[in-house]
Image (cartoon, rainbow, N blue to C red):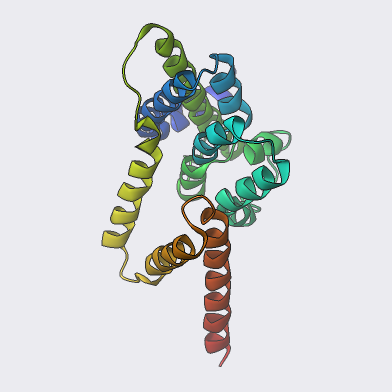
Length: 233
């Protein structure tokens, strides 16, 4: 590793260490879950590498065990990760002039990598492209390692895994409460809750997810349009 890459790695590593702890824990939970469903270690290892979307990977466990429905899987993946459309647009300038690294940065962008690469300015003597590359690479290594380790431990540790899939629900609940406390505008949070409850009542627990997410996106789009019109006035 030459000097430029070493400096970028050393600058990126401290920013990713807090994420390492969370990714190892969540990744191991995912690996345990996959193993408890009868999948070999190769499944969580490859899925965490190629999909690299924690919430979607937990959802994929049920997709793999359900009736084959590629259209439903495609739409579900699109809706669950629709936020990355907005992430990608906001990172167009950041990823400019990064050469071949741009392709990996696009592929490996997750919520945590986006947060660091979007908000952290590397030191003046550190190459921005390599800094963002190592942030993304390290975060993916943490996630793949956690998922693989969890699956391997699943071979030797035997315990009741009932409810382990609730880890993602718990994570998003904590994030929801944290954002509610930090934000003065609770309309987005209330929109999500109301839309979800409404679709749950209409479509039931087995079919409410996609309609709820679609309705949330429509509500946000309408709200944004009204705000833009008010600004123009």
